[in-house]
Length: 330
Image (cartoon, rainbow, N blue to C red; front, side):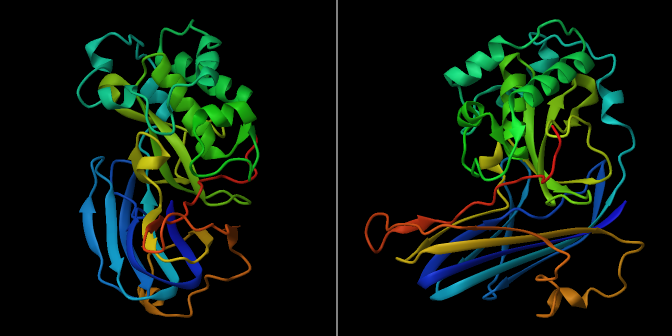
């Protein structure tokens, strides 16, 4: 499947702010499941961008804005061809789950067995782990049981959690979005000794917000296998991976700090659309007339009137974008 992804983040401030340091993780990698055919990042105000790889191998675009401004717009556009050669279910089949075996405790997987900032130990998570079935001896059964348990504990509902909600709080609420489903699935996997990591990305499904989150579990000789606990399925060619980490806190689409006394408002627009072919010209990326406000866009907006924190000269953290898949049916 050939997809074009357009992702706009607009940050506005009630007063001028300055000395911004900003990270963006929106560039799809090329791997065995997908090929990035083009990626372009544009910021307004326009500033130089430095590219580096983080500790998980994700591309990060870093920029600074030293002069005062009241609006920052970040537009990322990608064209990706997805080509999953084999279904994830086939890669789990026949793999025995032996959590104490070296195959599940190698140097490359050990980090994904530990608690992380948003998937940390809590009484609610301990209770969830205690109720998990323990009968599976192969990964197909284990992953299926975990997925069913997650979908049995959380109801999909927007605006009850935030980008920084830990899994224990989501469990207490019993509700959340795909980010929370992914965190609970990770907590379940790590609790039984199955290495698992968080995936941020996009999804092309009619009627859904296009940002999405799912997971990968370690299948020994078959490597990392994608699992979508929100939908109770294995990802297909409609899923586009952006970044991987221990949980959402490692891979937010954007993260930054700024100096000032202003209140911040964030608005996010994302569009994922299929293409018949790669466009011959990519000049639309450089124009100011791109259809970011088109009525066909699925938009998510959140406003926060943040109170003054610390002194006038202190830095303040930019708001996060929560990853969600609207109208899921867990």
